[in-house]
Amino acid sequence: MIVDTRYGKLRGRIEGDVAVFRGVPYAAPPFGDLRFRAPQRPEPWEGVRDALEDGPTAPKRPYPPPLDAILPEVRIEGEDCLNLNVWTPDLSGRRPVMVWVHGGSNRNGSNSVPVYDGGAFARSGVVLVSINYRLGVEGFCSFPDAPENRGLLDQVAALEWVRDNIAAFGGDPGNVTLFGESAGAIDIAALLAAPSVAGLFSRAILQSGPPAAGTREEARKTTAMIAKRLGVPATAAAFAAVDPERLLDAQVEVARKSSLMGGPGFGPVLDGELLTGLDLDPDKPVIFGQTSEEYRLWFVPTGLAARLKPYMVRLALLKLRVRGGVLKGYRALHPRLSPGEAFGLLLTDHLLRVPLRKLAETRPEGRTWLYEFAWRSPAHELGAAHAMELPFVFATTDTPEAQLMTGRETPSSLTDAMHGAWVRFAETGDPGWPSWSEPARPTMVFDEDSRVVGDHAADVHALWRR
Image 1 (cartoon, rainbow, N blue to C red):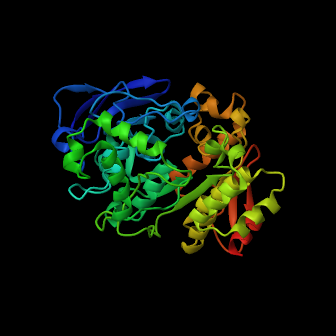
Image 2 (cartoon, rainbow, N blue to C red):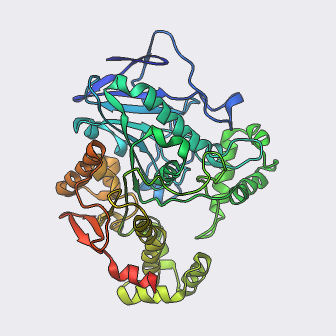
Image 3 (cartoon, rainbow, N blue to C red):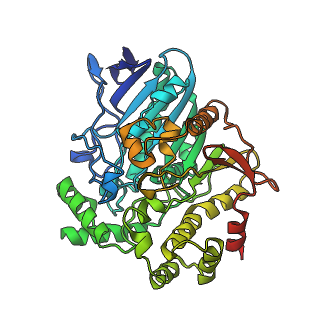
C-alpha cells in the first residue's frame, strides 16, 4: 500500500484489517547542526520509502526500578527520532483524526509502546496518529542560546505534518482531536494555551495531566544542575558538544539525588513566544480526567506508601504549602489507610482532581467534560493507579505489556465505554455524557459499570474549600 505525501511516497502494510505506516519522518533528525534547535522540515526523498517498522525513539533511559518491570521501555536506535505512526481504515474519505501524545514525565515513553497500538481506533473509523518528540535535556532544558520548548515545537511540527498530509491517509485535517496522558496531557494543555497553534486541532482530551508551565528561571535551575554534573557551562553550545549518552547519564544522576517532591522537571516553559500564559482556548471542547488512585503507581511498587512516616508527610505538606488540617480530613474520610496512603490520595487530589474541577468551573458551558477512572487492578496492588486507563482507551488490554498493570482479567464493558467515548468525542465533539454545568456538576466515573455521578467526591472538594 503506497501513499503520496508532500515529501515523497510511503509504503505501508496491512495489519489485520487496517493500513499502518510506521516511522514516518515529520521533521529532520535533531542532531548535528540541528541539535537544540527548532525542528526543521524533513528532506524530500526519491522513489518509495518503506514505512514498515517503528522509527527511532528519542534518546532516553529506562524507568528506574521497580517501575521498569511494570512500564517496560522500547528503545530504537537512530537519529531520525522525530517520526510518527499512522493507522487508517481506508485511504479514501474524510475521517476524524486523533493525534496521541505519549506521557512519561517528558523523559520517557515513545509511540512504539504496544499499549498505544492504534488498530482499534482505525477499526472504529478513526485515523490514529502517534508521535515521538524530543525528551529530557534535548527537548526541554532551558538555555540562553537555544529556543525554549523544543519538545513542544516538535509536537507543533507533527500537527503541521498532519494538516498537510493526513488527507492522503483518509483523514480530515479539519477534524483533529489531540489526546495525551500525564506529561502528554500537560503538553497538550500548553498547546491549548498557544494562540499560534489554534488552527491545527479542533478539541482535546487531557488524561491525568493539568495545565502547568514554569518560568525560564525555574527551568534553568534544572539546566544548571545537569551542567554542574557534566562540568560544562549551562549553554546549548556546551551541551551540544556532549555525547547524548553522557547527557542521559547526568540526567539520571540528578534525578536519583532528588527528594520525594523535588528534583529536575521537564515541561513547558513560559517563553513569551509560543507560550505566554496558561489560559486554555475557551472555544475548544476539552475532556479532563484522572484515575482515582494516581499515587499508587509510584507509592506502592516502591514501598513508599508503607515507608512514609507522619513526620515525613508533614515535611512534604510544607513543601506543597498544604495545611496539616487537610491531611487530618483525609484520615477522617479514610480511617483505615496508612499515613502514606492517605498522603497519596491527598496528592492525587491536590495535583489533579481539585484543580481540574476548578478549571471546569471557569470554562464556558458545553465545552468541558470531566471523568474519573475508578476500576482497581489486582496486579501489584496497583488499584486505580496512574496510567491504568490507557489499555482501555486503546482497547489493547490483551497485550502482555498492558497486563503487567491490569492483570489478565479485565472488564470488556470498561473497554467498550472508554474507547467508545473517545471515538465519539473525535467524531462529534460529544463523548456521550453531560458536559460540566452548575449545579449538576456531572462526572463520568469509568468502572466495570460506568455511570454519571452528580457532584462527584463532594466531601473531598468541601474539605479543600475549608
